[in-house]
Image (cartoon, rainbow, N blue to C red):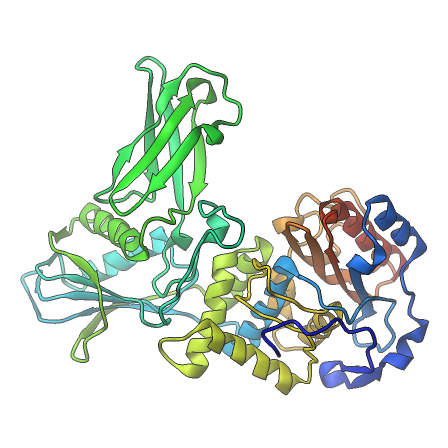
Length: 479
């Protein structure tokens, strides 16, 4: 695997199909290059054939049904999550869990901790406000009701990450742009509720999760029509203040805006929620919260165990959760290289794993494992090899069930609802500017199961969504 994309492959001499062995490109000469009706659909969408790569392949058989630009490397968008989640399932196991620990220094007398409480993160992608509340209950049930020392947050499971939420698309407030964190909470997301009080010409703002020590400055109530109300508000949300500058039309009624408070530090986000929940649970704490490392003499008092990896992978793939995918990549690095894991280490783990499995990775570029990237590259051929190997793997049930079902759930819930393929395809989708992609499995009308990969890289890629739907239907009818 390289970090810079190699030149596009024009000829494929051979590629590996995991434990099924090798089939040569020469055996694929009878594969259909591109179905005429699908080629026509791409033409109508203004997408040239050279901007598209496709593999449609029966599981476990050597002869592809369709092979078009299969060796060319493309931006995969979120279909890259198939690689990350499959690697995590195989290398960590579906029952893998993360443990967040609560340790103390000093001693506890009559419910009072005369020392520090240390919260040691494990990189849990799914640690939520509810989990934190239950964790706090466990800490308090261990005999601690008041903390006289500090609360220390140890997020050193991952190395220091210089993350800029605006780099990808200059939309840092979008929740999908949240970055990884060793003590990630709620995916660092805040739901902002705007509730107008017409009789007072005021707008109340409520934050979820609730936060301690944050001053809220609401927008000014306006009598204008609702319209695109978010454009009328500028958000500044840092460690001390949540300032919603602008006007909120009373005609909008109660609305919710999910944001990523990128100007707020990761430490402050966790601190403000932790202190709020600690006090609401009857605890007393008046000290400081700071970052630090777990002392060697600290004693474990309580531990929170995450949901299993199999469930986390479902959240990653069904709803294309970017920050969770980033967490998985770093977790792979931590499990194989130790505390202080880096993105580069996670990438190296995946590269070594692909090599051991005999999966070709020509031109593969992994930047963060989520597909939310302008750098990541993979060929449809490599993605097809990954899908084929995954289907023959012991973790096949967990991976396949994590993919959105056509017309039923996840990012495929509103696509192909009334098509015969509904309920018969598990498809990971991918969509960023100039990119549309699918990767997954189709149970054809014939009863045979196919893997399918299609990647579109072109300024008109958005128009390719319907063509991808048509391609899925074609695979179902003709497979």
